[in-house]
Length: 331
Image (cartoon, rainbow, N blue to C red; front, top):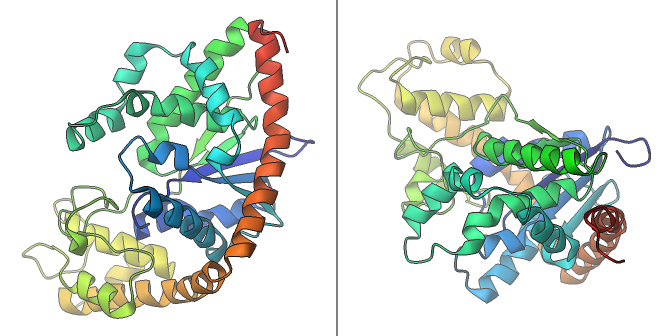
């Protein structure tokens, strides 16, 4: 807790183009925490290099991710917006926490297994210790809540375990954070394989709707979305494609699943897919317009980066100094 105000922390990787899964599962909800919490929102570029990146693309996407944060409603006057590598205390704390993290618990992380399969030629140590850096990100700001997608919940649980272990040895060092997972849109699935999560790294671009896709592209992708042989728009077991589309439509319109079923009673999948595409495109249009305006002003983005890094560093130094003293470093 900072100055009697609870802390919220979250981060997004600048790797690949962000999807509506990133938007609905996390970014769209970030702004709602600004009034109640001291919010730190980070572009986690250090995490991104666990997978090989093209340097020029990583730099470009770092600017784009920061611009998207603001386009989605994050006011840099009310939130601390910054780039992870601009605050070296993140990696400094990660090394210390590595020494209090167990090999076995890291080897059980689902994302490590998934990414090891996907990038079998590059199973590096950073990929393995990625969750420890994430723990450092969170604990550095004495974070109370972590808004995350359902796929990151395991990492926050590990963070809690590491913090608890450290606190048992060195009492009152870290606040134990709670993961906050949005009930609606907590896991948006692929349009081509609706049993799999929508992923920005999916090679099939028709499976993924990106935040910056234009309206025609969005509608075309939803028209091609995989469904079942039934024709009724209803949420039910075995109807993964329709269930996913209903979830997306619900997130963008605010309508409940029963309301959606009534709205499309007697109508076919074609009408429904078109409606989902229209709702998605209409909701993203103002975000895209604001994004283009912000991205055009590189000097302003760099000003936000610097201000955010300075503010984040002020709080991060307090924690890292405390941790160094606890473990016995001369400071």
